[in-house]
Image (cartoon, rainbow over the protein chains, first blue to last red):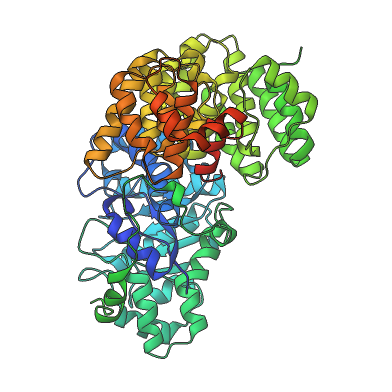
Length: 302
Length: 293
């Protein structure tokens, strides 16, 4: 079975993760621009970060036969530094129209400040003008209100909900997101976001239409195999295979494929891992011996 | 005489969609009338929104001949539509009468994605004032993204013509280190030098100490510069169970005029006969060893 993890921060993951993801069937990933655990102080740091998303990280993923895409944006945490934010806004047009950039993201609210709203609006306009999907980060605190308010701002800015993926949903937010016509993504992330047993119940209740699961694996305790693990757990729980395939593969492909920058043929044509793309002397591809164990013994993410 | 960019645009016209070519012509006209940096950057990236990256551009015979006459060593294999269209835009930029056009090229490079970098570095041999571009090329080689490294190091006549010996030797050694097919480095024989020959021999020692192999093609860099030490090491290569190693030793031995490699000629009569007949060359050995690209 093939998987598409539409939210994963590979810059902070090791090659072991790439190896395990490839072995577990992850064929494509989307890396949203986000902060890096601490605030940046220079616009140049953003530029180099964006460069790594369209450059070295893309290459790193290709060594494991994984197609790497990204979304480009100014995240809400760093939107609160207005001077920096303005400088980053000047960089964005250079990057949003690059090959393999499947959207503007992840943008949205953190503390729901005035400045966060200002840059959410400005970036929503960039997405509308570039005709790109938007990947939305919903806040950890005051999530329900923050999610509603995000959707209000986006509709007000002229966005088509069919081109917006609202991420980090939970049981409290999903209904309104779906009712208003947006895509609802769920991040399977231990402790702070959503566990995958809960995800099964959500799919039982809401079905698979416009629902996406992702890992948002980053520098914190998180799981780069969250998507395949959740799919496996869903199968065990008797969820229909078609629904599993939708939430873990074809829905994100449809949603972000609206950018025109991501097609199934991008990886269907690929002859798997290209041995010429490997560094001489390195044994990056040792196979996924530990993946079977990870997938079977540690399937539940809580 | 048509400029290389007009020739490329003409070739693109034969294969690409007419909408895409019309868009590119429009951008070129607009930018040459009134050049601004951001619209230029958008056009350069925007190529991915109009052309087909998988479609290879085939150059009409006449076009290929003119291009290769204008730019000796230029390789016209593997030009996809993205690369061709972007080369047209870079050509436009660098033929404009604009004092800071080089700064614009540097800024373009500093926010380029992988395929854009390949187009920029692949375009180097076509551009005017090559002496201004040497640092850009040398800096580009510091990448670890193989396809970007290859765009400068392989099938590209720019380094041979414009790199200093130091820059050239760094290129060849890194190509070896990354396991790139050396026979695609343009000018490998013409730019051979004693410092490189010694550095390659040293790399061989390092590899052998680590219990690793050195690619047979590496020895090509020693052609004409076989010291006593290298001759001694080549005897080990000649005794290798690996056919590629033995063939490399034979290739050097047959061309040797110092007498240092006479024992290898005696030890490898069959391989040396192949060399003498022309059925074994460095290029045929390299092609056999390399992954087809």
